[in-house]
Length: 136
Figure (tube, helix red, strand yellow):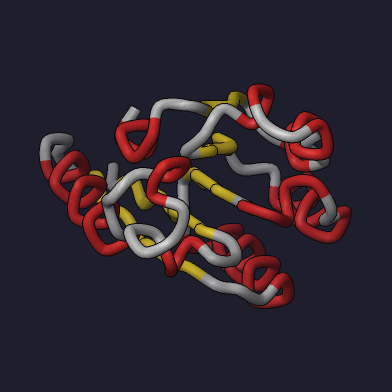
């Protein structure tokens, strides 16, 4: 049985490698996509679809698309982690196995980043492992 995993990345992650390298590291989102595709190749029948959007509505559309097209979701909601009830509601509606991912440890940063609205809809959280967190 084939396994399609949607990896959905939120706002400003398209700037990885060019923004706040001391916080987010030097890898670009394209580098991370290559890591993920290489990892997926090591599992027969597994594939990924890799997305990034700065638009909340596009992210919600991708989550809804996963209902029919994906077996699971990995989501790095970035700044929407702390603000988007709409993304939370989409994940709750779709009910796919979901991992919330953050490059940094959100609990070791500014106080406002300690609260994730998305966490209520996910099966697990990976944070603070840098780009390698994507392949965990």
